[in-house]
Image (tube, rainbow, N blue to C red):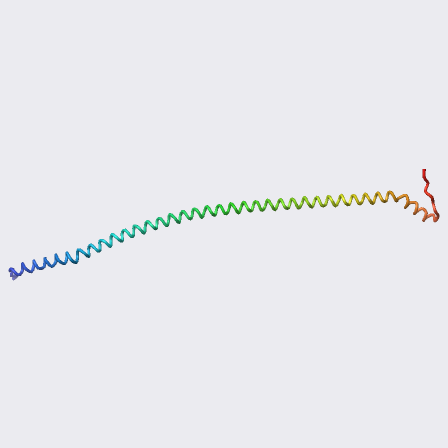
Length: 146
């Protein structure tokens, strides 16, 4: 059977003292270190989440700005396209008007030349009629004047 004597109590006191010393010098610092690491990890995780949210906010703001820039670029492109189209139409209309003017000037020039030739023919028609008659008759004819 188990014999309980003074050494048994000394061993229990010794055991409890060693457990207290181990707890005080080993377990307590290790638990404190583990708790500090958990706290630091939680703080770092919270800070990382805040930074991630800030990055997402910045990204969303940049997407909005990029969208606005795309819209502005499209508006500018449409405006430039409209201006270019308008200028092209103006140049085409100007060229058309110039061509019409040139054609009109050419017609007027041709009409002047036709009129000059007609005037020349009118002025020389009597002479030519006289010449043709003389050639046909084979003799000289003097013009009759009133």
